[in-house]
Length: 340
Image 1 (cartoon, rainbow, N blue to C red):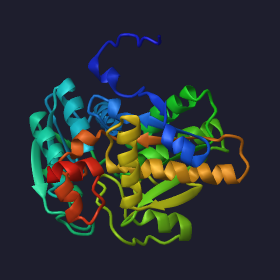
Image 2: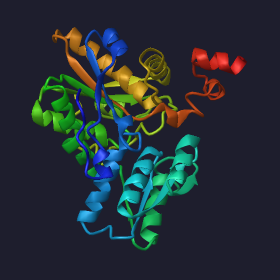
Image 3: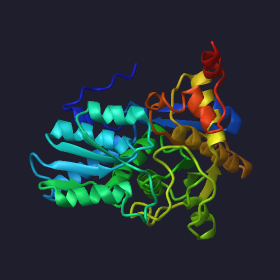
């Protein structure tokens, strides 16, 4: 039995998440598909990593002082990570979030003691966008810093120094491909950079939801979006500082419907309750695996990110009425419960 050694403090619990072989995706792809279990972080998402690195970076630069406040605009998971790290280090937290995100994220932030400011969703060019609102609040609040996760490269550094190194170690250096979706771009860029330092032949693929512009950018050089997605925390319409220089070798576009197939199958067949971003990532990993198999690679090893827990979306992805209102397929057991 592999017993984890005791940790000296709670922040050391962030990272070093398990890597698990996903049976259904592996069978479908014809090669091994591995999922990095980021829901095992204290805040139940991959964003804990960026939260820790951004706060530590602000401390090291002398911008964040004892008793200070961390302010951030986020779809929710980064805010949860920031609130937990800030609590552990004695800081206050203010989170600005679009009001169309899941109720579970809002309730969690309030439960963690964060001040939550909700704003209507709008385009990035609008001054009322949640990122701009949070930046202005930080500028106007004494002793506050703005985390700025989209353009704060401490975000991707967390994945260069953490996630990529863990994946390399956990696979024994036997990794042929990595893919995930981009929100801030920190994960795909950081893991890509870290793995490329180990082996230039590792293929890094962007998995983009509909409604985002990065697929077209990496495929055709133009930031152009098509369609829409209900996935929270992923999808980007600009090249953030974290995405600059990201070593993207190929790209896939995945629909919500395809992502939901894997959300449903991962729960029903493998006992993993995940969010839609994880389902989209799994679908992208299968596409990458099939691509590598078609090229003749011998049982390529492909890894992706299982971003967060599905328990954060009980009122949306796991709610029959909500799914039907979005014209999305309803899981069989949810439909049966709704009619019982």
